[in-house]
Image 1 (cartoon, one colour):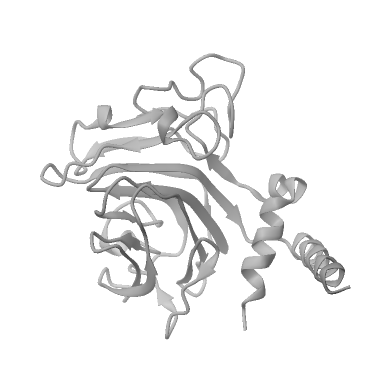
Image 2 (cartoon, rainbow, N blue to C red; image 1 turned 120 degrees about the horizontal axis):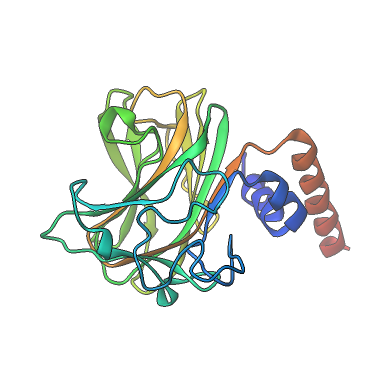
Length: 263
C-alpha cells in the first residue's frame, strides 16, 4: 500500500531544491568538501582528530557531537573524522570499537525538537561483523528512546518494537549486511502515533504490526550511534515531514517520469 513512498523519498532526495528546502539538520564530518564544508581550514571538522564538540558550523544542531566510551569519561580519541571513513565529501565519522571496553557512543542534540513526522537517514559501514545500533529519541536509554535499530554480529539487521515503557522486542527484518559495504539506513518516525518505519537501502521492512517507540516520548531531538566494532558513519540527515506542496511536486515528477518510461 505504501510502496510509492520510497520512490517519493528518492525523488525528494535527488531534487536539490526540494532537498535544500526540507533538510533540517545534516552532518557530513567534512572539512573542505561535502556537506557543510567551508573555506576555513579544519572547519567544521579537522580530519584525523576527534569530532567531540565539533561540527558547530553545521545548521540545525544544538551543539557539537558528543563522543564517549560506554557513556563515561574518555574515549573522545576513538571517535574521529577521517578521510577513509567518507561516504560523501572528504570526511566521515570513524568509531573505533572495542568489544571488551564498552560501546563507542556518538550523539548529538537537534536544535528543534520534532513533534510531527521526521525522516532520519545515514550511511553506515561496519568493518567486521559486530554490533551497531541507533536510538533516536530524547537522549538516553530505555524510556527516552523512540525508534531503535541494530546491526547484529550474526549479520542480520533488527528493528525494535517497543512497549512505551522502556522495554523492546527486536524483530529480525530479514535484511542482512556484509562488512566493508555501505548501507543507507532510514527511519520515518511518526511522533504523534509513537511508531516508526524502517528502511535499508530504501527498501522497507514490512513489520507484522507497527513498530512502537520504546519510551512514552512526544518529541525527537536526539540522534546517536553505539558501536562495538569499527564503524563508519556519514551523511547524517534529518528531514521534517514534507509539506503537501513539495510532496505533490515530487509525486508529479515521479508520475511524469513513469509516463516517460511507459511511453
